[in-house]
Image (cartoon, rainbow, N blue to C red):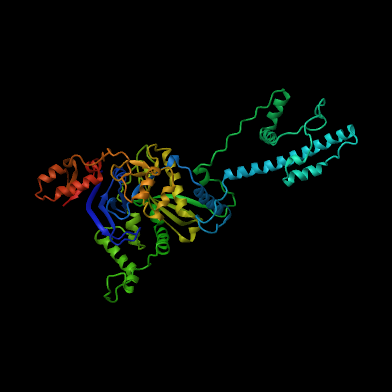
Length: 549
């Protein structure tokens, strides 16, 4: 089984949805008739990305908004406070049907488990202080009564109520002249309980709690034998893992039930076919409401001549509609891949995939390839994450959801679920440990959110080496395009080194390019094949079949 691709070359000077430049985008692309998961893994590690069966690579030093491939090291991922908030919001909704007001950014962070523990200790401290205050008052009262009997006519006594009032008022302690310690020549009053520190009292409560948790029989047996009771050491406070936060148990009478199903989209499984229509309707609503796509494309009933200038109001008002028509033309005629809400576009963009379904004994149970991760709430689909499962990673392709459930921050929630899914796959397939999030676009503020999933790396566009994002941000603040690898001597080790070994598919036969060029008398073939081979790398160029006619 070999990948078969048709190289389309450079496309430059077309519309960019990130900065809305009409002529700023530049990329190279190829149509993938079929592709192995290993070839696609190697391609995305060189900055490529698929959209349906169209695979493209931004030309980073030419395009208006450089797009850096980003991956999260999922095994070391720790959810941030905002991530925890989204997960807790989902749990509250599932458990009690509670709907949080406002969006994720505007709402204050809910208290985490660590905050709750801190709150408990604060309450214990207050109780301990109050207990010690009463004990102090009692001891003072006994001591002063004894002193009064011994020294009649001495200075006026200060009542404990006044002492407690003084202590609570915040006045300096020197205004109360009392001696807490025992008098010389006299020991402590054994008839009274000793005064203890708050820390000791907390330890005592902890010991009592642990003893109650032990079985009564075992505890009494130790006591009867006169042996000391061995209490287990308390574990230090550990932050909850991502899985703990996602899969926290719900009450039996929970208001809602959420189920996540993974179904193969290419080739379509029976489960995918059975849910296609419902899934498409969610996509259609998402595109119409979130991305403002029209439900139906208008038909041409008349011809209007308008100046091609944004200064003209009629041209400006019809620009989006005109561009949608152009985008559809580019997709069908020139095999480009914009997003629209028609069923054919949905199928072409999010259902069709060049990736072959592959299985291996040590691989994931579901196999490798393209899948839809469906989120079922109370028996209906509310969101779908389109993903590829590859040898070393889970690659996120797209997410669409029912806008009625925007309050659940499904974009963030689905990303966290996909990270957890990557970690789950890693348990059986050890080399699969990364979560690829597509492109990070630092020059577009709304696309910087991907950098919040730490630790993460960006791919250097010149040497194709992964660099921690923290090291990249200072350079990206100064320039949209950067060579992220700081080693000036480093080179692209995967570039094409032997053009004759590039495999081509010609007249239904696979052959090395060295053999193919001897059968051709076209001087333009070699520059095109060399450009292709340098972009895909030597390894892929020797495995994939480049279609030539």
